[in-house]
Length: 362
Ligand SMILES: *Cc1c(COP(=O)(O)O)cnc(C)c1O
Image (cartoon, rainbow, N blue to C red; front, top):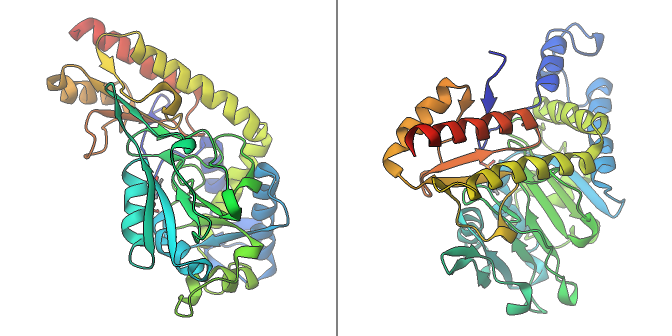
């Protein structure tokens, strides 16, 4: 099964080296004669593993001491309510940018806890999907926070600029599907959060990077397990954390550091995306209608002009070892998720397949 490439959107591919190391260590972790899943999270062995994972993530993303890094449960969606609950006392309303499916779901959830003001919406312009530039919308001074989703996993939209924080309104970003894919300036954000299963590790874990001055605004009725201040005080161990996910995320962080960190990942991710988009753009057979400035480097969506060939495309792709290319049911067509764990060879295999399929059926 050497040549299988996994284009799943999430849970998504993990680096092979990480999986084989986890396999080697599974029955006897750290010389304890048991697996990492079977020991106390409060023992010195797991604590050391947890601390190293956090230190490595801080190194990778250059996270300063102004921020807490939390390893929580509840995935990405757990943060859709945790953010409004934890920032409730900063204001009576929050602002959201609507750029696709995930930012829409975040709004629906936030509305249960706070009034939500939509600052702007992605829309079609001349048949191309665009996100309005920040000069066309307003961050309000008394907003509790501003929320956006820099990478829309379903739609294949990525926003490469960080909205400027006016009046000290904290910027909150759902980076579930593009965290660790490139270098970013963490200092521009109040909160960054991500469900783990796209670019970090297995599902069940969420990482929250929160500026320390934002830890005192939670509603009284915030459940303790979702209260950032409580979890920060307890080192993310108020409740039992997802220990296996935390350990595996740590292995992924080590793998990233050994492979040149986020700057190297960014180069590789740029080459992968460039190759795939240019294959789509130079063909009459495939299309992508997202404005070039907003094309995701993680989730490349595309359609066959002849949609009756979709099924055949997917079954032939599978025979060629190119797995899970079916687009999200809301969008249709195809989606190739090419997170950090996807090697360039995987994208080369996909583009060669696409060209070959076009020759046969175009
Ligand atoms: C996958 C995803 C989520 C949801 O994550 P869950 O862990 O399933 O709750 C939220 N936001 C984005 C951008 C995602 O890609």
